[in-house]
Amino acid sequence: MEHKTRSQTKHMGRKIGRMRELLGIKQDTVADQLGLSQQAISKIERSENVEDATLEKMAKALGVTTEVVKNFDEEATINYIQQNYEGSNQGAYSVGNYNCTFNPIDKWEKAMEENKKLYEDLLKAKEALLESEKEKVAMLKQFLEERK
View 1: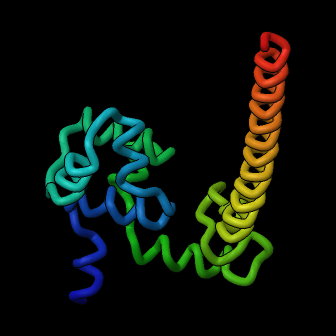
View 2: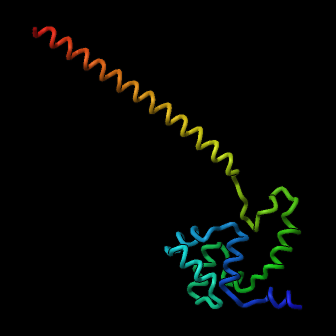
């Protein structure tokens, strides 16, 4: 009984926060979308009551309607995810149409390769500049020798 009462809580901020977490969205991302600070989002998620206008903005940032937030039931959502996504081709961490479409390690490796290429390009540019300076010095030496 106690568990059922907890899942039916009217604490709107907590519902928003749990939905955001389940969707894999960071507070910073929501804050950027709404033009607020991360601390402001945190304060909203700690609030038992959330104004309708704020609730509408938060729901839009999460990609859901205000009705979805108002009727959010964490237990039902987790059961739905377990029944419909775990073990499927979409993976255990997808919710609705949200799928993680990249591997962070792959992104890191790609960034490292790009950094290596940039470093190589920098070395080539440095060598070309050094060669140019050597040519200038040689031309100046030749000019001075001719003036003597």
